[in-house]
Length: 370
View 1 (cartoon, helix red, strand yellow):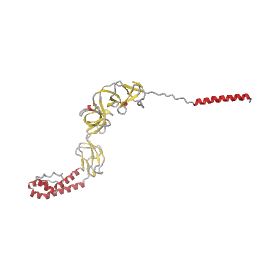
View 2 (cartoon, rainbow, N blue to C red):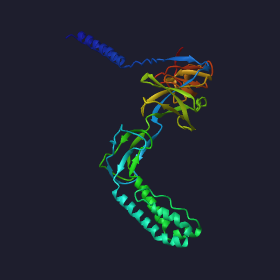
View 3 (spheres, one colour):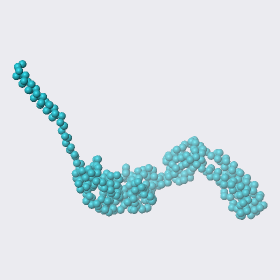
View 4 (cartoon, one colour):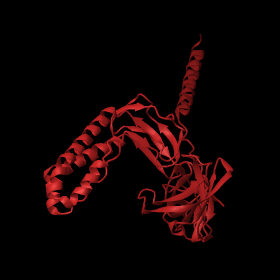
């Protein structure tokens, strides 16, 4: 290769290296990312406080007005009765619900009655001699003494001397020990306190029943109460005796008319509501039904209605400030429905966020749409 060709090749190599390095450096330079901030669109409502008519709509669970839990106060084996002790069994007032084997206790009771009868027999001669004016009533009591019938009250002593004589003979102690056994004996048979239906049965014939054991649940299926939670701001429009329209939300054609029977005197500190109970009578109602009640309320002045999902933390809503940023404002919720809330405390012309924005926070910039 000639001397001149070598020089030209060297120059070309230097030039190529220069441009190659320049290209590499240019490729390594990072472009600054473009920060495209998307401003969300806020659907707002211009506040205008007006007269808002309110009908109180609340839901609650139905429960029997007369309901008892059946407990045993004695111990023994459960015996069969005329009806099966199972859920759905109907009983008239006074019918036997549960019968517990009581042979041992009955024998003790009869022995104690016999001891009382012997004691009275032993003191009759002394009464005839020392208290002749009292002899006839004690003689009659002894002759009418029936081992198989409940004890009758003892004759009243005519004088303190007679009373002290009877006390010294241990008559009153023996009598009340016998009465106590008689009272306990009655607890071996549990009867229906009213006409109703058995809704829960926890024992079967042959089961060993223990003292204090729950045996079942018994209700009156004709009278019920619906428990409602009414806002304290609206409780002034509810009074005992006021009519209430009740319906089944799953089947609106089913409706009943009830009356407010009781109003709790205490406000729930967590929910700021008051418990109201509505009395209902119908053979078509069942324990545990979830029902909706409508009570004619009152008009609310200086209030506005908003979608229910616009409420934040139970007592605040988002508003749009003058510089189009979100702010939280505290309100007083005076009524709620399934879809809306009625609030007070918002000034007229305030721009209220009517639909929630995902990820909303205080200070978020928004564009507005009425």
